[in-house]
Length: 250
Image (cartoon, rainbow, N blue to C red; front, side, top):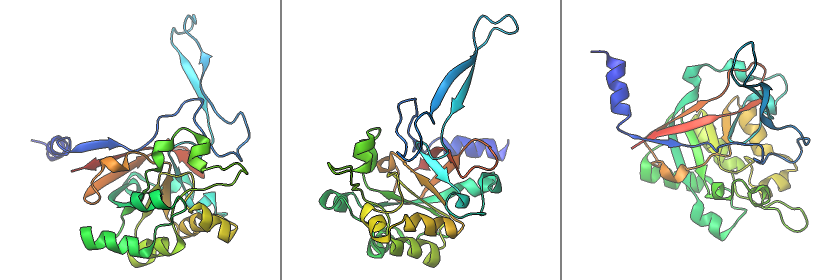
């Protein structure tokens, strides 16, 4: 009897939840990235070739495309990039903080320390090394870029997200390892506007932490007790990469 094989059988008795969006050539990405940055599934070696009858494709995409992981070097010059992280760095206890009701009342809502503490009162302290995911219900807007950005008639953006105070709590008080969210940005839109920068994202990455953006299906995961796994292509020198993310949950 092999222990890990038996452990896998036990793990498969739990619910496995996809947390990443499917991508295609019409999937949205940040407007600052030039047009033509995405070309998925282009044929470079076609059926009927005398050398070998098979199909080979190429895939072109920005690092920050769809559900993606950001590394510190994305915002902090000279800091860690994709090759820094090993497989043990990409599996975490998962905590899902639900602020959907507050977002329904205020599209600009930024999660507070009080929200995090209310979560801990119900589910226990956020464990060291945790991945803290913010559930806002925003993933329902995928793949409509204007809806994801909350774009108004004047081009302004309106969406919920993190506050600096909440991030400092999970990282400086609880020593979390990573955070995630359904929105395109870490910072709630009004927080970013007030700072004149994506200050919350800059803080996370300057702390040497990881984050995953544009998550989905967080409502299908237990608020506490689940495990999240983040995977990405093993490319060197990347500031971010599209990620396949899933949870194993009760």
